[in-house]
Structures are given as structure tokens and as C-alpha cells.
Length: 78
Image (cartoon, rainbow, N blue to C red; front, side, top):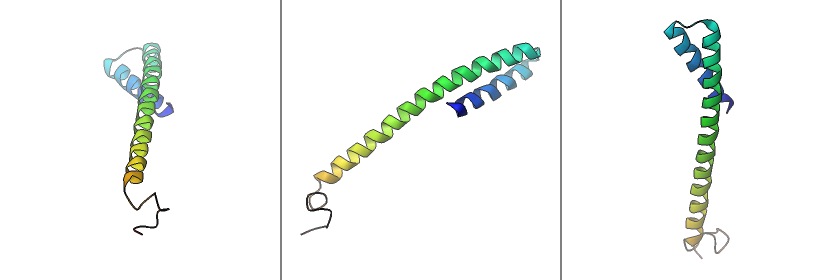
């Protein structure tokens, strides 16, 4: 979320300067961009973590389904 806020602030500052706005308007827009980018990064991070956890669960289930891996203590073929 902090990384998203930093990126949003930099984007807001950059766009404000590019438009030639007054500094109070630049800071206001950068603040709004900070909030929005932070929220989006937090949401995306949650989606990404859930996806990684699901992939790990599927990998563990696939390993358990293979004969000779988890059923005999992971010692290979008996």
C-alpha cells in the first residue's frame, strides 16, 4: 500500500507540473492520487497473495496425488 501511495504521489505531482497547475492544486491532486493508488495496490496485492496461496495448495494436492511421494513419507518408490 505504501508503494502504491508513493507511485500515486509521484504520478500526481508529475501530471500537475505537466499541466502547469498552481502548487496547492498539484499537492491536492497528488494527495488524491496517493490515496487511490494505495487502495488499488492494496486490493491487487490481496488478489496476488490469494492467487499464490491457491497455486501452492494445488501444487501440494498434486504432489499428494502422485504415488510414492507423500504416501510413504517422501522416500521415493518403495
